[in-house]
Length: 144
Image 1 (cartoon, rainbow, N blue to C red):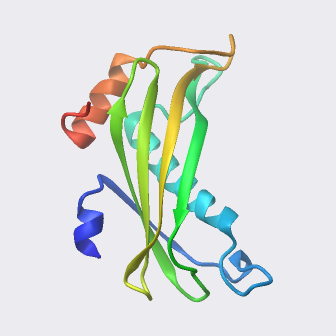
Image 2: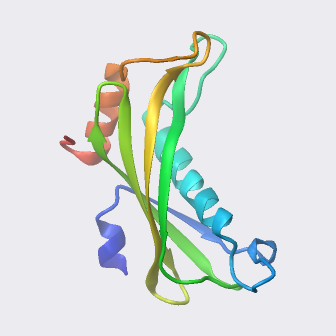
């Protein structure tokens, strides 16, 4: 599985919590989306566009997410979330995630997120700031 994760620029490791399981005794599907969120935030913190502030109202907003559930996860386990940006648009980016179970040594889910650069004050999308583009290129290399 290290080969799969080696393709991703940012890898976040998290424990599976007992409370992540649902009545069917496997991790609830909403938790997979939270794992993607953790990977997304970890990635964005490295770029400097991790959220709006009073001084700068520009930050990312999640526009869409799609997740393919491949295998159920149960407690105890640890997951590693690989995250990368695969497309830079005018005001949006496409982010890919892969979730790998340590105990299964397998990909248990993969997801794609669309993030929009957003002005929280004017409530409108904004062009991707050059500093954010530069940070992504530094992390990823060339991105389409």
